[in-house]
Image (cartoon, rainbow over the protein chains, first blue to last red):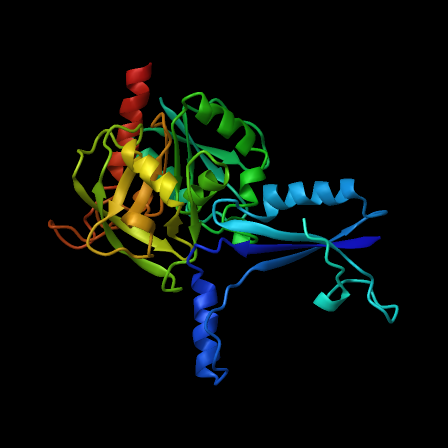
Length: 103
Length: 233
């Protein structure tokens, strides 16, 4: 079993109302100096077997079909998450466990 | 009698109001189930408002792949009148039957109000009872109602007369170019965020010049499609 991580972001030229609200809230809480926030989505897909180029291509297709809407969002990365140490559930739950494989 | 199907998805809210509106307009409302790839011989289809699949992922994104959507997309491409209201509009955009997409309202608040609209195109299957430039008032209630498309697409649909309704007075959700509803190239598929099915019966509609809650401007949508179907028959 392996995990593939898909990152989806609102298109750069599109207004992101949620990101804007988060930025304003950061300001109110004293986390100053943040000039912009954009809010995207991260999906973790656990798949059977090895993560081959074919599997990655298939997940990329799924990302463009269902996980994102190309009118408003971009699939910015589809990458294999490396198993985290410590014998946990093996989910690449933190970015540091991911081995970048930009597509 | 003309049969108009109303699809119920898990999380649809306005399917019964839609069916009632269809009945008041003088047609038979036929219940369609999201899980059945069967249109039960209807002459037209309405996708009602609500929060299908809890708006998970994106509003309309999961419903778009429901079994019933296969025959709906096929029938729509063959000319069957299809109306999507609110969540139904979002589903039609996700299905690529209509251009653009909806994102969170610009002010992030849920909006619920009586909304004035300008009719921009009175030649679609669902708007022929109206006149171009006519002002109508029907309720709007949404959270993800900000209509968006890239400038090229917006220019294209404007040039082709495919903007069917524009918000008048107030733009309630930040929609691009005040767009409240659009149609496909053939004019048989129409989607809009405001709710015609909530303005069909005196006593329960928006306020109008005649008095409180007397507005029935929503009836024009259903009368339009009846006329369209009669003209085709």
